[in-house]
Image (cartoon, rainbow, N blue to C red):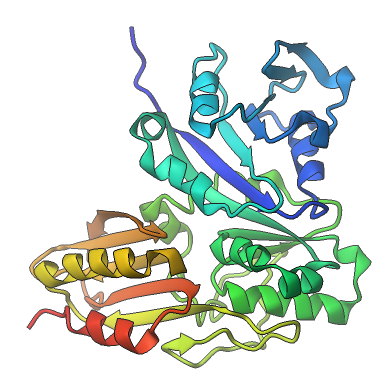
Length: 352
């Protein structure tokens, strides 16, 4: 009997060499966490797997004694994932490590675009590891470091033991300026609880919003958050500007990434969808991420949309609740975006 295929969550892990990715991957491959993860890496050599932990291996795949497996990207990510899917032993999640320099977008897009891969897997979250000590330098000499942060759902600010409290505050402010919406975890030796990195549901639109009611409040992300003991929100820090903070000055560098928050009323679907399509085609290379909750005229359900560069995905999520304001909100995170044009054309899509 063919079982109903459940989609396996995929986490994309990004971050420069030296940010702590290897340490994190080794924890997944060796710790007794009771889950079975498949870890896809660029090079085995970089990870240096402890031979005592390997139960069996063929050319391509190493099976670990904690039930996880590790394999390397052979030529093509899609083929590697398909190879994993043919394994008789099931696993709970897949983690894909990108090379230190890589832009995570193409990896994320693979899981958005390829129908075969999409039927079996679903993109869960993009996690960026950041070296607290070296980030200021990285941001000065590399656009990729900024992109990795801008693109992430979760930022693990690692090696905090190597910087002073003041330096850490500056680095955190720099991360926030690039990506006001990411969840930040401050760690030493990649010691983040795996549950904070894996199975976040950040790309599952309905779940992303249920998990985080402030999904779109990039600017007032830290007002009235319910905070746990390891809360990463600074309560003395309020953004009051509504529409654009154009790369808010961080103490470390000038941010070229901006987040633009658009608000409007009910949208005319005949105007809104063509506008969104045209905007993403035109500005796609500069749009890193896009997220929105849209009120469509004469539609009882909230419409939720998100995108990576030019690839869009949207779905009806749930009915508007009684008394809930039917307002449309859309957030773009990207570079060189024409805020005024976006605002004007978005507002022009409102229903009469």
